[in-house]
Length: 117
Image (tube, rainbow, N blue to C red; front, top):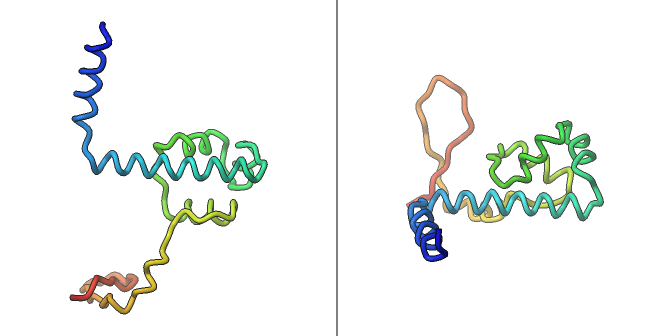
């Protein structure tokens, strides 16, 4: 296979990627990199970090692969353990622009808000 054929094939493959899925993948990779850098900066090995998190090392490897779909609870646990910020909710300070939405349900749930206007 020639270089031209490889480039054409690669271009075709890349053109078929959904931009929204690519954005998700990019963010997962960014999370993984940020976590890996924090682990390294703390002087921890993956095994030590896994022990601190109550996980097995193979799960940490999945986290650092850039393909793992984290729960918010896991991200908050990682933030607490490593002393880093992974979830930014700072924009919530403009909460006065939001209004409470009433949802009829027999199940007790947290209030739901939407942007007013």
